[in-house]
Image (tube, rainbow, N blue to C red; front, side, top):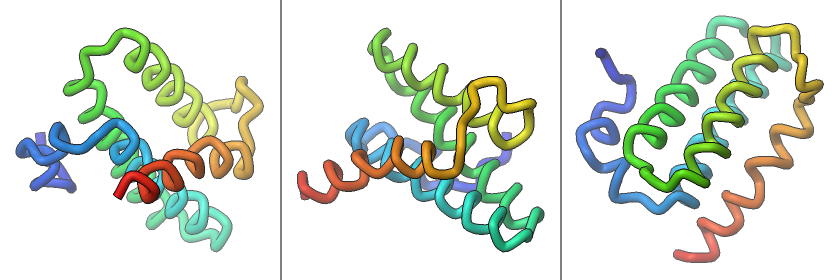
Length: 110
């Protein structure tokens, strides 16, 4: 598999805390949302793909069942929001609100 985040895929991702991982995923989702607003579907798609890559790296590295359940549900909902029928009725603001606490907590811990 060809990774866009090569250094993270090579092992650095597993060294980050779950808060840091979720904050990084949130950054990519934020980029996808911003490009979507600007109607740049190509850049939005690429940012979304990077977010999925980071989500999948998190799923590969995290063996905590509680985390896995939350992350897999989040992955399902975000794919549904960007490319499905939005059955979970997500919104741009709900995704921003979901990831923002991870960003704050990650920054606070450093």
